[in-house]
Image 1: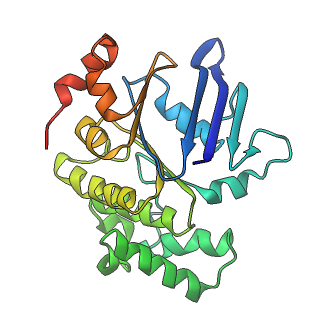
Image 2: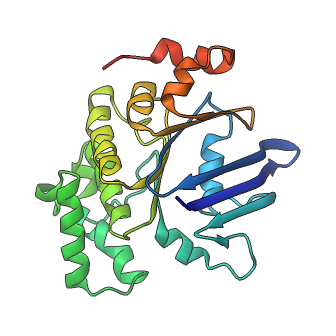
Image 3: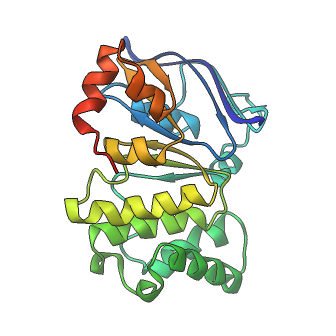
Length: 246
């Protein structure tokens, strides 16, 4: 299957600090890739480089065969196709849930309000928030806010979804409701890259794991291969205490 994303020799520096060091990997349509590793290893920076919220220092990123780092690349068009869900939701607090899902459709995709509302309600239903459409953001729980953020991203009909630690700001009882939505998207064939510390979720739902350590990819393989790769002590120390069998 052809790659939808190709990352070649990607490097990102902040001053003299090398955060990403010669990163190389590809993403095929329908893959669910969990990006794992200790805090500070470069996971979130990698995700932000993919849709150019961070500008790579060097290297190449191809999306659907086009180099997005080329000078003529349309960054806004890229972000339409690559939906992003953040740790802290990034919803507009002064809008209700429905209008949060409508705004970008109207401004960026130039859809009518009626079409935007139809698509918004469909996606709110998908994440279990149809009955919260007219609620203000401050009236929602953390889990509901994150599900609203997922619905908002889905309204743009992206080719790929990027999740940057989507459960890290949630109370434990709200984690499962958000992971359940992501699992549903995985079952529907959505291509996703997910930065996560939820190892049980990663091992059971992801088709592939990427482990970053000090800015380098130290493992790239299936969850089964991760469990069986006993000679990679860094990997095993990270996943083994966190494995919970179904």
